[in-house]
Length: 330
Image 1: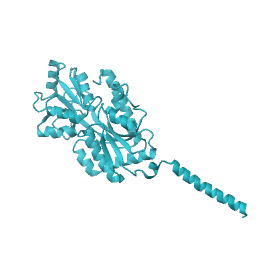
Image 2: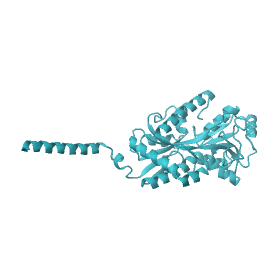
Image 3: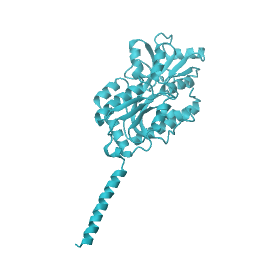
Image 4: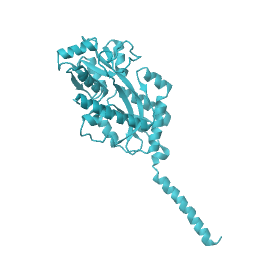
């Protein structure tokens, strides 16, 4: 082999080595060694509600598995729109994620000028699960059944109130569904999350609330609240003596609070896949399933594609219901 041939071969090897370096440099560092620093999990509600409790439990399991802190950041307000906007504007690198809930699907319907595009600005990570809701009143309330509550609402139009964690949340949608199904005039009182709404119900400032079983059932058991019905099509094993809204005479009354993990649009697919695997691993943990299962959580899991289909179907479903029944975000 002459000197020219050796020089050409050496040049070729150098070229290949440089190509490998350039390819490695072009691949996001986060995709190569993800995660190498803390992950922020946005919770778009105040501390203390069902979304917050579930997020903290899953975040703790993900932290153990991934070897990096999962830092909970509560960014409440505007029916989750403040936290959701923060996610939309975050770098799509897998280090900012969010626990979304039903308001994510209904905000585009109730709020015409959101500071983000629900259909384009997010990548679904996983459908975490759902929790049935329970209709509760203060223990000092004169109402002992859904029938009595509806009769009072009809006798006193515009005087009874229902609290919620904000427009579009399960508590709000349930109240609106009660209004249209029972043909009653009750007033929506929105809060910046379920926790402050529940506090006012406990204090007697509002008449009723559709809350997650997770947060209300302990108050029912303590005697501070009275349970009138659950919103699931079947009775909850956690409260077998509490009838369903359907049993109470309101057909097709079926609502649950659901939870889906999101990341910013454009997050690399391999990172989405890793996050999805970590969420599925977390909700398969026997201790977590036992603890949260005893609080009413039903876990779903599955692929990012399944989660995306679910969210889109919820947007379509509630769009039709809201338009047909004339529901409002007020």
